[in-house]
Image (cartoon, rainbow, N blue to C red; front, side, top):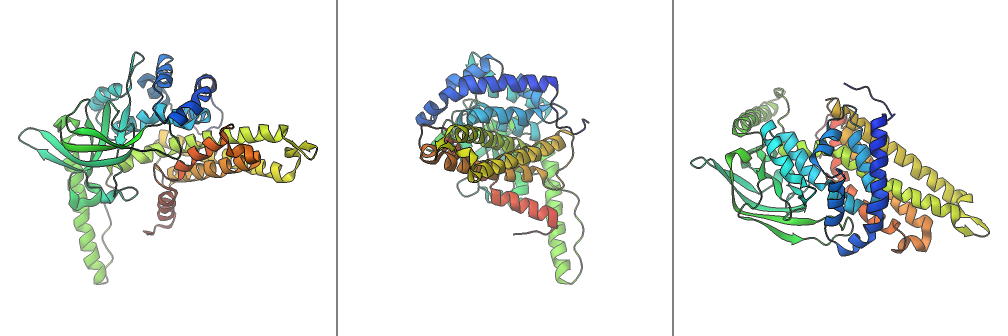
Length: 424
């Protein structure tokens, strides 16, 4: 296990400089165009694939870095370049993490390469969890997966929403209900192979920000997939469901005992939820994306404040501006430290016993929103126009208190963790 350290090694520094160059030279010049077009920037993704930035090998190397710092470092630099294009490049990784978190080694080796394709034939993947009536409340999920034992197939029906790359993906990873009586513990993840009949794209959303990233509904109508597309396999699912049913019985008995004044029996450990396992693994990386956006906006505001002259002097000479920039930089550095701590803990196999993953995502997301708003204020009227990038950064930052778990949900997770109380 690598010791926690704030110094990047030489290899990490080289990768950071390489990605920063791509972000500065390829992503930033194209950012405004693809934001206006609201389309997937396939040429940019292909450029990333040609240099090895968009590839399974690259992300595997970063993912298995023992320090845990490579993934947040990569995310920060890409999203410093542009959040919409950045999300188009890394959106596939969420589906890949879904397979890594829940799949077998064989499934990982089979499906993740098909998510990326190659430089000559670029592909993307989608992770599909949210539904029209089941966003933060994953227990309200309605998409069903029913096992057809005679054919060893799973049949999926339902509608997913807010899916990055939904409908245009080569591979979709879908979370569905297999046992409705167990609530969120009765969920499982499935791979939907390319060109599977019954899967289609629903509404494509026109968004406030991250416009270069494709977001859409995914409709599943009698979608049949082979049994081996159940991530983790049937035996593992049956064991997990059996534990969940046993815990449900114990909880029911505990409630009856509590009514009689007898303390409930203790649990037997946590039963893993398919969607939450993916979100837990991805939260620090999402926080790093927010840090990248905040840093980009801060740098624009700092440069502007040094050159914008009012009343005969640069506006940075005024405490009202300089103190804002001091606060912005402080929050950015604090957010990065929280992200790096959570990332190191995940790589070291340390559980988030203090909700460190949620802390990192919450603080970084809120920092991105506040810093980009302050940057617009420092630029004044110019910040409100599309001639400067901070208005786009501000729009992009807004999503970071919403997706991958809202700020309210992160606070709920943290509150429950630190208090030991089931806060509602």
